[in-house]
Image (cartoon, rainbow, N blue to C red; front, side):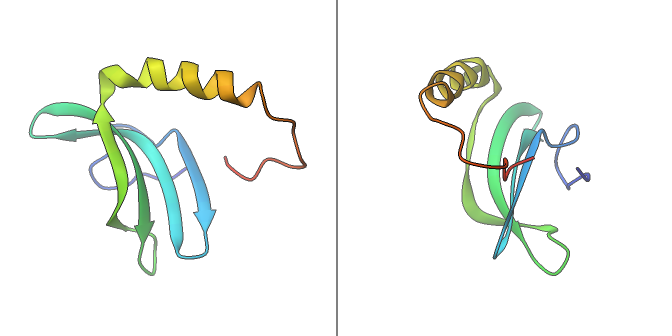
Length: 83
C-alpha cells in the first residue's frame, strides 16, 4: 500500500474500484487523530474525494469488533477482493 497525503502511517486497507480506490487508515487533522474510509480518485489515485467517512480514532476498536462479528455470519464466496 502506498503512502497517501495526510495519512499518519500507511493505510491499513485498500480496495480498487472502477472510479478510484477506497482507502482506510489513520489521519491527522489540526493535531487530532482520526480514522478514515475515503474514495480517492484522479489519474494517480492521489485526490481525496468528498465520498467517505471520518471517525474518532477511539471508535476503531468497536468498529473492528462489529465487523468481525458480521464477517463470522457470512460465508466466503471466492477470492478476497480487498487487500
